[in-house]
Image (tube, rainbow, N blue to C red; front, side, top):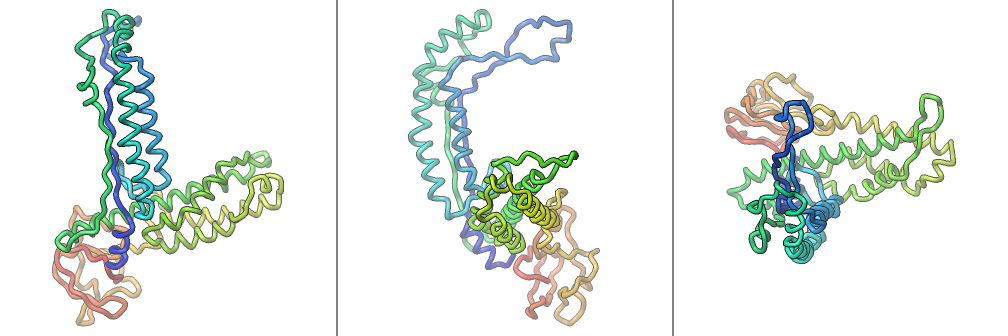
Length: 354
């Protein structure tokens, strides 16, 4: 990915995190078990409040995340990447929940809690412990729901950090898109095949609609401009355009033809996605000290081989799925376009292909 592409990507995406906290409704209980087994092998819990209101809060917290899921690009646990074009819509959804709906749900729970505590005292009997219960403002303080949305368009002194984060994000986005495409296409291709007895497998509407929805939203989510993946998705869009699941079910010839095309697409996607490490075929690996001299590789400014001046990766730095490397010593190299550049020690080169 070139420097310009990195800058373009930084302007296309924002990062999103959501923080959700609520009253913990489970406590360890101390009850005897009707068993001859060793009791320390068991862990029993009691529910402090039988509260539909608290269950509704947990339910809606999950539903809000589901509601914005289709806008997001998976990145890492706890952090999502959002195309900047979708940021306004997602912010409106999250603001409405943060400022209006969730406070109302919490208020309803706090209002119902005293009566639910009275019921708990009767139900739990000797296991009831008044000190485990909170009411009023103390109970309200147990709840929090917020989100952060930020970008990595930074000042010059922050470019190193931006490089690292954007490259990490780019790899994660491309990986997720290719893996998601592979999963959807292979599932539909499999459902179009036959069982061992030669009879057609059951064809699910969801396999069609999920793939068609993915293809429809691919261009806006392809913020890394993955060329080879886009070419494959464009082919699939053409294949799936106007395709109706009922017509496929009732037309054996159409079913066989579609199965053949999707099997071919699955094969192409499989070559892009390697499950172990999930690297991409259309991204060239970094040349390292032990690598053979690749065709079109760089030469040093005096005409020598690029690998005559070995590039040594520190033990804690692994080659990434993008053109570039970390160098131990300053060296001037010539790139395939004829330009030259000085590689400084401990700098990541990401703007040229060797």
